[in-house]
Image (cartoon, rainbow, N blue to C red; front, side):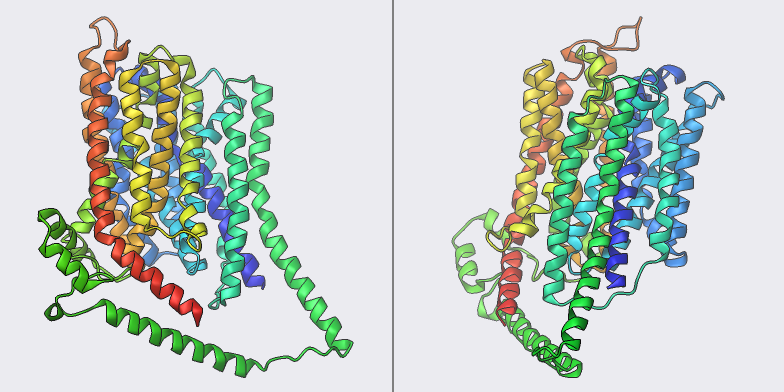
Length: 568
């Protein structure tokens, strides 16, 4: 039980790490000041945002580092990369030192790489300590990454609300301090035995409690006034830290429960109670028999799933029926049925993944969904300024951060309601993409402050869900053991999208900028960009629908096998 309490300390540590390492989300808070100090155009500023996102293209390096160094060493490598990347940028933006544009670009790249390394550390810790509840652990911890900007807004306001440069200093120092605090739990990481079904259910309930606590945290920072005075901001920041410390009660509850059971058990033994204790060896034999029986059921299910092509079956639950349907349908049905996934969780090496249609549909759905949301957040400062809402930048940043957080939390909902309502996770991905084209249609149609706030909320909610659900979807479609490599291949779309979408936005912005000023004012600054982003998000929605149609049979078959196994 001590090991069980230690693994919950790991969860708390990953929550802290994620909460303070989403430093790329506050770029819009200081981007205007950085643009002014460097004397660069909007296109050049966009390249700096691309550099930060380009760090994700080097995510494979964190996996390579973990093969040669302990987890805590990789964590501190990430912390010192962030310290150098953001710290030197702070020296530049405060005019303490002067650097050429190219070196600032490299600093942004280094800072972005540190974020990716932190994420990899958290994914590994969740995978190692919660193999049975992996999606719940990852969605919970990743959700706090989306709320980083709100925490940094509170912290910056508490220190100096008049200075945008404070964000860079906090980005440099706080992740390092968080790594120091998280060191002891990571060094004390336990070795865990497989959990019984009752223990897995208990962990699910504890995750539900932590998700409720996370919702309270999100609501707190959402309605905490970002434009408040310094004293109020300090009190709000202290309250936010208290909410982050609150999950520490979970390890305490686990230890207390263990103490109570041991004391209760000891009392009844001394009192000569009538409880009949099962011999440990008999229990292990019983478990082995159950697992063998479950395995035989699973193999039968898989055997029925893999009908040979000679019998006219297609990879799916009802092979012969589906084949008949395809013969009578057009090209669309043949596209859906061609090279479908046989089962979930089957390992796919990288060389196989990049040759699968499912991967590229998934890649495009992410590229035209979550990545657009990230680029939107990078441009949020200039968007607000162009619409005459420059004073609302911090409020919009907090709004985006909070709704991104709620979107990430919602990604865990399918795992909680699957007993009553099961839907393929790729179907939930399609639903999550729906708000994005609606948001850009609204932003293109109206330049009001209300439209800006509503559009920002919808984009953040959608992209937050996608960011958190992506790891679980990658694991289910292409194998849990290959998720590190395959997911890093997937997120190469982020720097590509940041470059393409950001450059289009910057070119349109600069086209409407007067020669006397580097600032564009008016709806025309981003109107064509919103239309372009909206069209691309519709393409992403179409790709996600096709992905869902191609994978739903594998998901349904997996759920049927799971329910059959539970019956025994």
